[in-house]
Length: 235
Image (cartoon, rainbow, N blue to C red; front, side, top):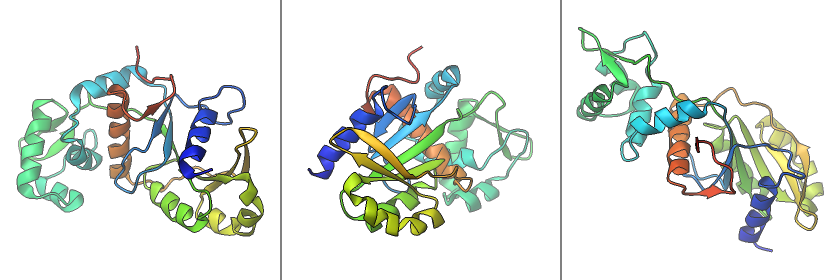
């Protein structure tokens, strides 16, 4: 078995209602984040109406830049262009151009001093994100990649075949220290054993979280990278 075949079996498991220990509204495959490309991302979300409204106003082409700006802003609190420049890494010219675009969409508002805040009508949907990194053998590489996904994931797991159980038990302290869960996947019986359950990650990056949430909503709308027949926003 190669990693592609392992992925297909794991994907089938996640879409199964019979044994699945995870319940997702949607499952995505290989979505590019600021920090790598997880093999799978599972999403739990309840705010379907907000998802629909959000998709109607965000831009696919500009989201990478816009998400950095929006992550720095809060309702009822204004920030200067200088503050945004220092905290987004964007140039002043780029910022002014994007802020004008966001103002036209009424996503941000400007006061008489030229500072910006997020419109009260704008809200990015809350969602729980689970990231999964699959590997047949190389647990070190899997752990390294999974740690990167913690910048935007509430829960992150490494998935390896069940015959790696004894090896991973010896390394489990390293996974615990980094709060990366371990799933042992029995490919013959299509079942999973949780060797270590990841705790909720409270140290996510706001800008990375904003970016991946928007990316997932856009990918779902375009029906790209979407696995299974579950949809978040078909209302």
